[in-house]
Every structure is written in structure tokens, then in C-alpha cells.
Amino acid sequence: MCMKNVNAVARLYNEVEMGNNPNRVSTFKNQFDIISAKFNNENNPYIGDFYIISEINLLGTAVQEDKETNIVEQQKKAKFKVRITKISDERDRQYSWDVDEFEIDTSKDGLIIEGACVPYVNFTKVSEVNKIQLTPNDYSGEYVIKILLESQNSSEERPWIVQSISRLSVN
Image (cartoon, one colour):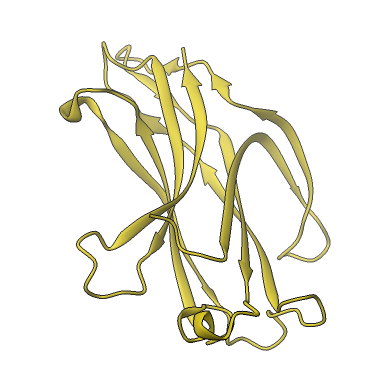
């Protein structure tokens, strides 16, 4: 189950150009959702040399009873993971690779933007994917890019919640 008031989207790009401010991206180039596997000297398949852009929007709330659990309203930290998973009906063929892990600390000065209908945070994370070794003889097919959010509830059976899923096809 997704966490309320947290919007997340993952997009794939071949190139990213950083702006004059090191925390700002100026240009994303060549968005894709299909990639061809490459092969190393031992003929093992891999994918790499691309970027996953995670766009995170944390929204406050105008609903009084939701304020006590809202990340922005409580100025809490939110921890995220970016994961690539191969889709399969067979659980033992659902391979996963964690690409990145990052945190948004909403208590930092200037991060929360006020003046809209609710306070909010916009955050963009650039994760470079150099090389992910795929499973030989089972590499082509459908994958997903997941943005996972660490649960704020310590009693959760699963500590990470799927907040977003985006498609990736590998041929």
C-alpha cells in the first residue's frame, strides 16, 4: 500500500546534463523504456550506462487528523530506494537489484515550500546505472523500476512500501 501524500515517478534517460547549481539538473536527454542488453567478454548479458531520475513530491495536508502522520507537516525524514526487478509469475525468477538509496530530510531549512494550498517538497534524484549483470538465458523480457519508501510504521511486516512502478523492457 502506498503512503498518502507522497508522489513518486521514475524515468529513464541516456544522458543527464547538470546545471551551474550542482543540485539542479538542466537537461534530460533521450528518455526510454526499452533497452537492449549488452554482452561482456564471457558473453554474459548486462544493462547500464543510463540514468534513473526519481521525481518525488511530498505534500502536506489540510486534513487535521492526517497532520500527525504526514511527513511534511511533521518535518520528518523520508527514506527511498530505487530498485529494478524482473517480472515473472515464478517467484524464484523475480530478480532484483537495488540501484540507489536516498533520504529527504524535510526539516532542512528552505526545503518545504509554503504558500500553495498545502506545504510541499519537490525533490529530484539522479541515480546513475553503470552496469547491472543480468541472468544468462533469462535476461530478456519485462522489468519494473520501483521507488520504495521506508515505512513510518515500525509494526509493518514489510519495512519498504512500493510507492511507484515504471516499465522497462530488455531485449
